Image (cartoon, rainbow, N blue to C red; front, side, top):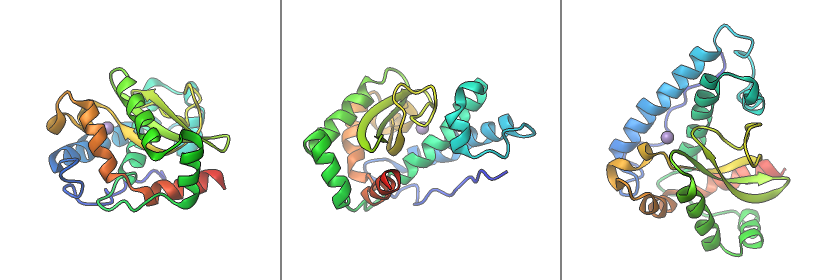
Amino acid sequence: MSFEFADLPYDYNALEPYIDARTMEIHYDRHHRTYYNNFMNAVKDTEHADKSLDTILAEISSHSTAVRNNAGGFYNHNVYWNCMSASGGSASEALSSAINSTFGSNDELKDKMKAAGIGQFGSGFAWLIVKDGNLEVTSTPNQDNPLMDVADSQGHPILALDVWEHAYYLKYQNKRPDYIEAWWNVVNWDYVSRQYANATA
Ligand code: MN
């Protein structure tokens, strides 16, 4: 089995005051761990156990609901953790240029991500993806993601925003827009820029 449950790349309190330590601890150590455990249980002793996660996601319509929800949850949270850090740097020249030419400005990108996050009814994720070499903002319900063959818009995720209530409710309660505003302060642009470079290489 080659699916590693990776350490969180920073301490639980690293994203304070924007994302509180208690939220990060419960989110990582309970929610994320449960997705991982349930994913492992769903694929163990099956023909899928030795597949790559990318392959499983790309053919998710042929899998059980348990695999869809938990492979998605495991993948989505790994991207979400890596998309955040205490000192996020800034977008690369290539990514900045693509953001400006696609959306007009960084603020326009933020408005689009916010609208996607707020507009996702119930639980899900907002995403910045690379699709056919171009940037696009999209959202997915539950633990679906843009690598899945069931996604409305398929592409390679480079930035993930978790808008499940468990991501923000302790600190922000029902105020999802406030969480999204605060979240930009901890976006790891170095990571996002590397993902952009990989997805456009
Ligand atoms: Mn989550």
